[in-house]
Structure formats: structure tokens, C-alpha cells
Image (cartoon, rainbow, N blue to C red):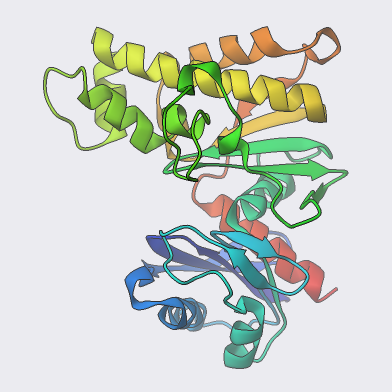
Length: 300
């Protein structure tokens, strides 16, 4: 039986799974990402995660935060969530440490590949996936393959301008982008300005919205409408069969999903009105499975 490892490297945690060719996960291991300790420590944590799986692997696939050149396996750029990560020769370093072939791509691209293999996009060849969490990332699958663009930077759905974000600073250094009003931190910040009592998580805001609190409902609906507008515009440009939304923000209830769907539908051109917007099905396993798929393709 062919076994590979799929790794999801994020700013706060690194998750690994031991996966066979059918997509069955035989073992999992998760550990904190030592981001503050620098790139060498992050690579070492990924190596440790694979070794903790306690299984013989023929290849390793990685979905990493940052802009990734999938041809070289090099991190082209990254945010402060992983200080110094840009420039890391991730494929080279992991191959030297593990002694097996390694395939590397961006974590949201891996997420999309996982959903297309075994999740909510199975059977679809043209898919737009957006992961809404700490940031808002995206991936476009064209004929079943990731569209990376000329500089490996395709997929930055969070940096599409929307009217409700006009003048609001974005994490990229610009302003007016949907991430500035629709990401998890943006929703929490917006709620903090109007809340009767402080909260520590978006789950609390969602619970208050479900309980009928007007401030919470207004904040979730505002972020959802902005994201729906952005997604509708992207679909008008790319014409996928299906749109998937995942990430932590997607765990909010109907107070978020209903305005998201309404705003999305309102933006679509007539020939695209039947494009479905659906929630991802694989949750935290999506990027690990997508990374494993990369590994399986590397050893075919």
C-alpha cells in the first residue's frame, strides 16, 4: 500500500496526515508552528510532524502559508505570521531531511485540491474555493488543476476591492480590500466598536447573532455581504462550475450564510446565475488531503 504524508503549515499550527491512495487518513499529528523561532525551526517542526506519523512514506506533499513557487518549492513571499519565511527553499530542505520526494504548494491551493478530490467539489473540474479565516485566501481550479498565474500569486481573493471597505487599511498595506471587512479579525474588530460586552472569539459573536442580538447580526451580515459581492465579481471573471467557502468564518450560522448567498447571487451575470455557492466539506483535513494528493502525483 502506497502511503504518503500531507502537511499543512500555518502560522499557528502544523498538521500532518499519513494518507493512502484512496484518501484514507491512517494517522494524524499536529503541533504548534514555532514561527517566532524562524524558518529553520518551522521546517524542523514539519519534519518532526512527519516522523511522528510512524509510517513509511514514499513522498511528502506540503501546503504552506505564503506565496509558493510550486516548480521550485520555494517560498516567494509571506506575511509576518511566519517571520523570515520568504526565501525558504522548503522542498529542498524537506527532501534533504526526509529523503523522499516532496511537492510544495500554497495552503489554500492544497485546501482546494483536497475538496476537489474527496470533498464538496468532487466531480467538478472548474472550482473557486475561498477560505475565510484570519485572512481571506482563494484558489481557482481550471480543468482540475490549480491556476497559479505568471508569478505563482494567483488566488488572493481577499484583496479584491469592495465599496464597504473603502478607506479601511488592509493587512497587505493597501486599503479598501474585502479582507479588511470580512476576515475573522475584521469582524471581531467591527463588533468590538458596537458590542454591549466584549468577546474573545468569532464563535461568541455568531452565538449572540443566533440569539437575536442586533449588533452581532449586523456585523456578520455586513462582512458576509462584502464577501458575497467580491465572490460574485470573481465568478463573473472566471466562470467556475462551483464556489466553495471554507475557513473559520464559514462556521458562522445562517446570520452569515444568508446575506453571503444573497449578495453573491445579486452580482452574477445572467449566464452564471446557476453557479452554486456551497460550504466546504472536509474542514481541517482539507489542506492535509490536498497536500497528500500532491505527494501521490509526485510518485506516479
